Amino acid sequence: MSEGPANQPAPTPCGLLVIDKPLGPTSMDVCRRIRWRLVQGGAPKRVKVGHGGTLDPLATGVLVVMVGKATKLCERVMAGTKVYLTEIDLSCFSSTDDQEGEKTAVEVAAAPTREAVEAVCARFVGASVMQTPPAYSAMKIDGERAYDMARRGEEVKLAARRVRIDRVEVTAYAWPVLTVEVECGKGTYIRSLARDIGVALGTGGCLKSLRRTRVGRWGIDGAQRLDGLPEKMGQGDLLDLPTED
Image (tube, rainbow, N blue to C red):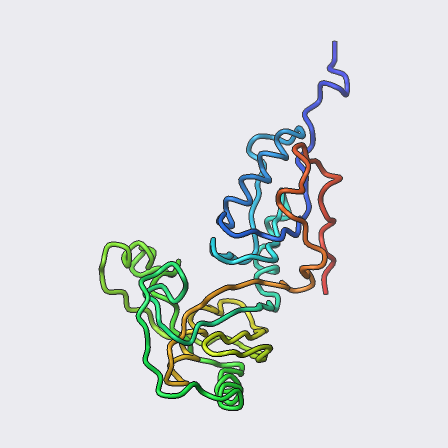
C-alpha cells in the first residue's frame, strides 16, 4: 500500500527573511531561532539557514536570513551596498573599538567644530579607502580568529585593506557624540571607521551604537522583529528569491 500525501515529508522551505536584529543575539543566534521555528512548522531538522553580512551582538538592524537553497545567494546578498546609522564617542578609545572593550579617555583641549568634523569625515569617502580591521574581529591570522587571539592577550596585527565607502554624512553632533550615516560596500568595519575618524580629529573614537538600515535592496522598513515571528513557520512566511538585477 503506497503512502498517501499526508505521509510524505514536507518539502524544504526556500526563501528569505529580512529581520530587524535586536541587541544581544549574534547573527547565528537569529538563524538558530528561525531554524527552530521552521522545524516546528514541519521543515526537515537539517534545513539550512544562513545570513548575509554579520552584525555584532551590540548592533541592530537589517539582517537578511536565507533558507534552504536560498543560502546559495549569500555572496550576492553580502555584495550589496549597506547603510548604517552610527553614534561615535569622541571622548575615548576602546580595546575593541566599541562599548565592550576597556576604554581609555582622551584629553581634548577644545572640541572640534562641526565643520572640522565634516571635513574629516569626507576624507574617508572613496573607492579604495585603506582600513585596518579591529583586533577583535573575525578576521583570520594563520587560520585562527583574531578575536580569539586578542582575548588571550596576544598581540594582533592585521594588515590594512581596501574598502569602498560611498558616503559618510554627519546627521548630528553634540560633543562628544557624533552621529553619522555611512553607505559602504562589503567588508567595511564601522568600528574601524569610528576609530580612524577619532585619530584624524585628534580625539578619541569609539563606536557607541550601530544600526544597519539597508542591505542591497532590503531596507529596515520591510524588516520583521524577531519576537514577532510565529512559533511555527513555513514556506508562506518567506520572501521569494530575488530576480537577477
